[in-house]
Image (cartoon, rainbow, N blue to C red; front, side, top):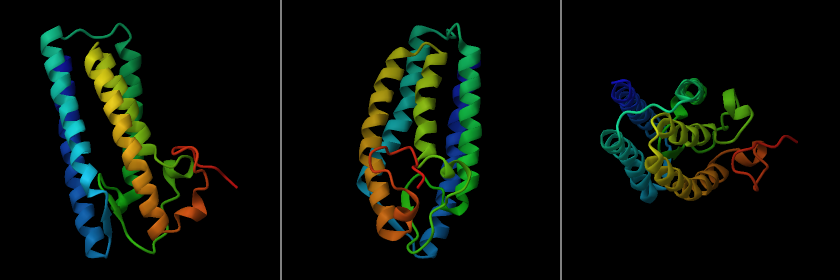
Length: 185
């Protein structure tokens, strides 16, 4: 029963996040923001939607077996949720699931963004590993770990290019080698 309740709670959380993202999108576009990377967004949504579909199918076909280390894995998941809230709160009206940039603004350099460039992508990557692992859903883990990295391979360069074009991104993020680590000068 716990696995089903857990998945339902995470799905509801994602739906609430989509509501927040749409509200923020309207605000940003009303203030002149530009959207980038529309063509890949549908793939990203498909990957994240199919993750829950595959996870649920794997749970029903293999059984609802918890990993023997499910408690530490669950604690890692809870840490990612704290990180997720920290990211959303830090970005405020600029947080979105799409690449939407308000030209001539300063990038957010507070919260987790003072340490790493893309904390939300790191959090999602950890979630896509920890959630299936908690329930021994290894097929879901492998498929979506790979798909997530492929979509991030497309998305991160697009996002960074948009930020470089429209904001003071270059002044605050110097590392071109590592898409996650923020180098200090």
